Length: 138
Figure 1: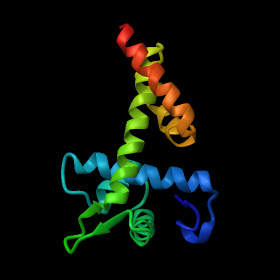
Figure 2 (figure 1 turned 90 degrees about the horizontal axis):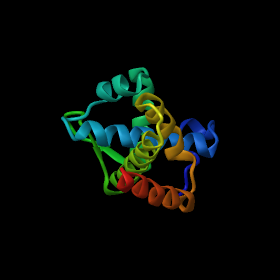
Figure 3 (figure 1 turned 45 degrees about the vertical axis):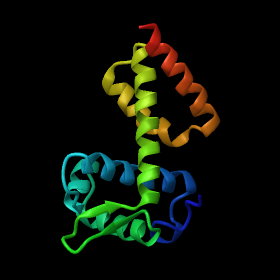
């Protein structure tokens, strides 16, 4: 999957773009479990301005990760849903692993937020296995 040329003409490097895309999609996914999602909800959750969210949503829609309906509700496409679910799973795995190793919840959540974007699939699978073993031991 290509991650470049998504936000503002490629001003961000690939990792930052990937992180931003995944953060938006994960946020939409989490919010949609509780209610209809609108730009203002995303802005509040991510602590960014509404204009920033508008630019991001336009780019995400152009890349077919999301669509916005006539009531301005934001929906994930199948492609966006898949990325969101994978990112959410990675986040939870890293958070559980870290808390299982004794890291406090707040720090574990913040670190998991960074790790979910930066770790390769191979390393993630190994850490996921370790996390499952750590949970089983408790």
